[in-house]
Image (cartoon, rainbow, N blue to C red; front, top):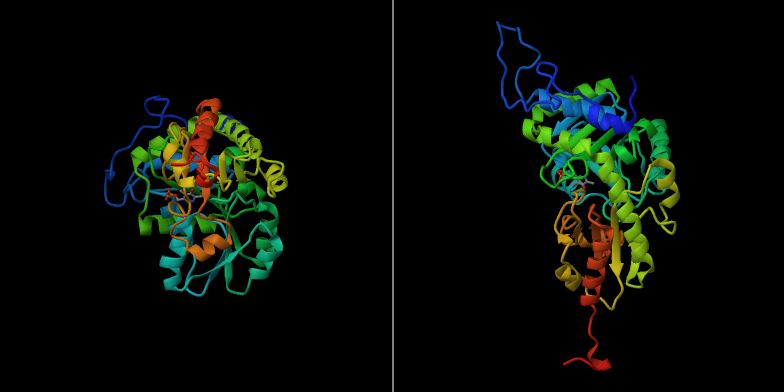
Length: 392
Ligand SMILES: *Cc1c(COP(=O)(O)O)cnc(C)c1O
């Protein structure tokens, strides 16, 4: 029986435990497995290579993304490390000009010294990607919407370009999750997630996931996963499976709250700029609407000059200043000094990641409480102009 996504979230992958009837996949907290005689095992040998709890999550992410194979890692960056290990010295990868800071860092500081080149391009413009492809190019690596400016890249158009050029399209789908966007079904080759974010959903675990269709690439990735060893633990695998069960209801609320808040910000008179692909005024609106079932719940904005963004962060009462995103609780961060500090300032500023940029991961609290908190923190951040009187 083929199931709709909302059912797959709960019954996809491995549904419960056949041995006991437990409705949840047990946490197989074991490092190794008994062999009855030399060369004879149950299919499980050693938990870096394979673990039933992790395997259940791996099957689940493959189901949700419309893939054939899934892999789970100890972090999003461990997943990215393993995928980038498909390439060798002399290869080139094209990346979006706004991308998760850690992805840029591993390319620039870990893989570049080993000979793997990267080229930064505005991937919202397919012609610019095409122009960047040369004979060494092996992959195009995008996030959409991208972190932190929420720019939208056309997955289908980029996938067509990649196929014609014989290069892989890798999509970091962390911001939308398979509930809202399924890049493999749009032609992408590999999907990457930080499961730390919406999939886990409760800011209580670090994890990474990969999903894909191609058997040969999957076999190489399983080899690399075991060879490099950054695997997800059985307990964390359980937590991510548990988180995914409520992904649908959480994302519905996340998106509903984010839409309300983005519209409020846009008309509030408080902001110079709002980045949110769910606003009709956003340059990514049409493409986002075509390729995803919703704009997600990440909003970035810049306050008007009469407000001090440092004071805004300081005055928030309900919304928490913290790294990360995608949890049930609302979090704000300052990309320039936090998530994107590893990107050199000149590259950051050129792409619009200005020092005043505020990134907001909209949680599932009551939306009116969130708007009240934003408003009081913005008002408290108003810069007092002494010349106008009233100053001390
Ligand atoms: C957080 C994040 C990552 C890295 O994941 P970790 O789990 O923190 O290692 C990668 N991509 C995006 C878009 C992220 O938000």
